[in-house]
Every structure is written in structure tokens, then in C-alpha cells.
Image (cartoon, rainbow over all chains, first blue to last red; front, side, top):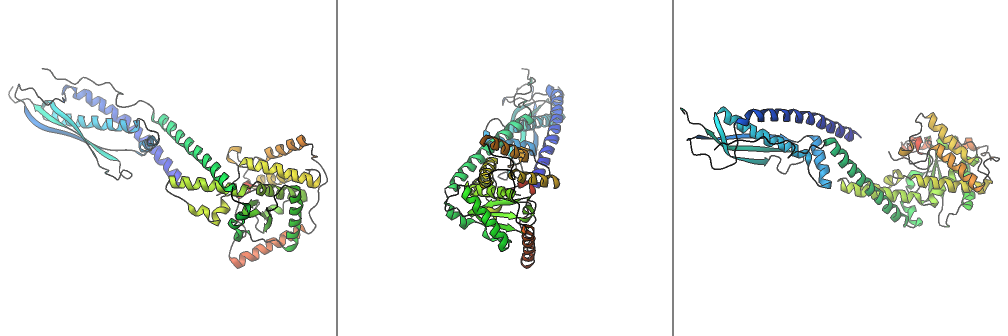
Amino acid sequence: MYNLIVFLVLLLLGYGVGQYAERRHYRSIIEREGRLNALPAIASRYPPTQPHYRQALVTGSTVISVDYFKRFLAALRNLFGGRVTSYESLLDRARRESLLRMKQQAASMGAAMVFNVKYETASISKGRGNTIGSIEVLAYGTALIEPRGQ
Amino acid sequence: MKYRNPPIPEGINVSDRHPLRELFVLAGGALLLLLLLSWLLGQFGGRLARLLPFEHEAVLAPVSLLSSDAGPELQAYLDQLGDRLTTQMVLPEAMQVHLHVSGGDSFNAFATLGGNILLYRGLLEQLPHENALAMLLAHEMAHIEHRDPITGIGQGAAIQLVLGMLFGDPNLGVLGSAGLYTQLHYTREMETEADADALQAVQRLYGHIGGARELFDVIHAQREKSGLGEMPAIFSSHPLDQQRIEAIDTLAHERGWSKTGETTPLPPDFTRWIIEAADRAKARARTDGMIPGMPTSPSSLPGHPRPG
């Protein structure tokens, strides 16, 4: 009985806090994406050769952890199969946040665009999935900075 | 060449399905599966347990918990009433019923393995006449006749064993005697059938069912007094008192049994015998350092101790 109460409190807390944070985060993501849209992030490996851009590595990294509610939903999904929608939104936020952080860094360098953009992901839990459910999403690319004096 | 990032529409990588809806669908499905599994296991375990010959049940009976506090007179009286009822019922030859009295003040009575029936003083002292006592005895004997104790244990053991293995906590204590004692859990169908058979035995014995209904009045009164009230039918494996009384009336009407008739009083010394049983229980508690009787809730009457 006691366990059940703890479980329900955690579930409720996970849902309430998690949903609130997610909505807030999405609002912030969409707002910043609009602001940084002028700085394109391109996947192509072949940057324009003219003018002679200075180049710099830019990275943006996000570490996210899953809340109790989402984890419970995902565990239930394990029984039936199908889209683990509770994790999808989490990872979507992590990807977009990483890209935004990378762009932020590039913008602070005065870059015109970022080329050869790639994503990496790393699981931090590494076999201890029941205790820590965290992963890192890293976005990186080559910032092309317009040469001075042009 | 002009490079740009077109704005990407929302909702491609993320589903806009509400997470709570997802939770209810998934949790509901899981619960349904679990219930179905439990039900199947229960049916299987119950059927399997029924195959055990009655003689072997006695070995499993929690004899140590059934020490009787009844004096020789009370025991003799109960035994002869039990024998008279046995002749009215269709108990097979091998099914020996053993009656025990506990001096504990629990308001309870139940049938358990090996044809053992335990009656508590708390219930006995509330009975108005022999007809109600006969109804109580017949009800418990009907459980034994239907092999409800072993079926209940088989169901409980199968469910607990498999669910325990699924959830990583196989509680094998269910196979010990303490487990046997508390695992007894009869379904509503079992209770209703036991009521019907008991009623028939009482009718045959006394020629009417006049006093039998009053057993349920006593139970109902006790429940009101203890302030627990009746649980809604869905939470209680016992049919509600009112429903039981109605079922009795319907059955009596169908078979043309008389609902009124002269009731047989309990022997004049019955109260004294019961007080003696209580004293014996207290004396035993002092020597053993044990509390007489198992604590049971008054909502589980008559039939079985409700699993905690």
C-alpha cells in the first residue's frame, strides 16, 4: 500500500512537472529557432569556396533525463510494442536544443553559416538503465566565419 | 549560392497524442491482461487442486491452529448437530467433518482443509437458537462438500506463484501451513451455492427454514454495530446480506419451503459452555503466550478469514 502511494505520487509529480517543463521548453525552442534562422545549419560536406571563410569547430550538447511518468509509459509500451511517444518528444527536444546551442556558439563567433552538421548520441546510463536514464545529444559542425575586412 | 534553413513544421517527430490518453490505454490493457491471466490461473489452480483426494487434504490441514476450546458437553452437542446435518446432506462417506470451537471473541466461523470447521465464540454467543447454528454449520459443511477450501487454496497458490515469478517475488510461503490458513478465499458463487445447500439441509432437518434467515440478521446486526457497514458488492466476495436473504426467500418460494416454523432453542447450558470455552482460551493464551484465535474482520462472515 505504501509502495503504491509512493508510486502514484512519483507518477503524478513526473506528469505534472514533466509536462509543464516540456511545454515551456518547446515554447523557448520555437522562439530561438526563429531568431537563429538567419544562420543556416547545412548538412553538406562541401562548403562554398568563395569567399575564403575562416573555419571553426562549433558544438552544442544536451544531456537529458527521463521523468518517472515517461519512463512508466515507455515500460508499458514494452509490453505492447509501437511508438514510444513519451521518449520521442524528449529526444526531439534534445536534438533541437543541441542544434540551437551549436548555432548560438557559431553566432557568437560571427559565423555566416555552419557546414557539415552532424549529430552524435551517447547513453550515460550504460547498462544501469533502471537507475539513470540519461543520454547526451551532441550536435557539431564547421562554422564558416566571414573573413575580416570584406 | 544561397543557403537557408526552411522552417520545419511541428508534429513530425513528435506525436500530438495526449500522454494521459496513452497512459490509460496502455495501463488499462496491461491490467486487463493481468486480470485475464489471474482468472485463467485461478481456474487452472482450482481445478488441479480439486483432483487431490479428500483423504490427502487432512495432511495439509493447519491442525496446530485448530485446537478446540470446547468442553466435552459443547463438543458432544455440536457433533450430534453436525451428524444430524450430515445425514441430510450428501457428503461422501470419506468426508469426515471435524468441528472446533475457538474461545476467541472474533465474530467468525469458517471451513478449512481436511473437513475442519472452526467456530468462534464471538459468533456462537450471538446465535438466537439452534436453527441459526444449524444453518451456520450446514453452510460451512456445504463448503467442505463442494471442496471449496482446497479449491480456494489451489486458486490462490496458482495466482500467487505465477504472478510472483512474473514480478520477481515468488512467495513460496503459500505452500506452508500459515499460507494455507490465510489463503482461503471463496468466490461469491461458492458462497451462494453453500447457502442454497445449507438451506436445503436445514429444511430437511426441521421441516422449515424459519430460523435460518436469522443467521444473516445476526451477521447484519454485527456489521452495523461494528460500524463497518456493508462494502459495495463489487469489493466483497460475499453476497450482500440483503441479497442473501432475498436469495433465501426466492429459493424457499420456488421449492415451497415454509419460512416460518417453531425454532428449536439452544440447550439451556449453551451459554455456560461458551463461557467455559472462553476461559479455556484465556488459560491457554496465558500458558502459550498467544492471543486466542486469529484476528479476523467481521465482514467475512460466515465462511472464511479474509486475507489481510
